[in-house]
Image (cartoon, rainbow, N blue to C red; front, side, top):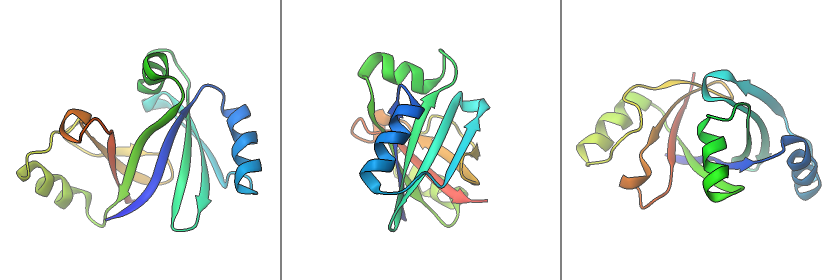
Length: 131
């Protein structure tokens, strides 16, 4: 397992893309809408890991609710895994709770699943596997 990316919830992807491009000295390598999750994303490579900016594309999306409650900032930590199904099984046996029982398609060509923050010290954790 490795830190695949850090997800950051933002109000304006346009403004945040400008900020992160200046901060990191490069443009996003990928922008993508994930309609099912109600977000538009930008990805930045940062060595071994990435930064994912997430802007809500609809008011009832989890990212919109996060920003309304907590404001902009770190939304989740994503860990890359070789076999997402094996990791789900292992982590359930360890007592971790999941938001959904099955992986689904996410951004950046990944299968994803989220662990519930109440079982991870208040941190939303995502597992992701290359499709």
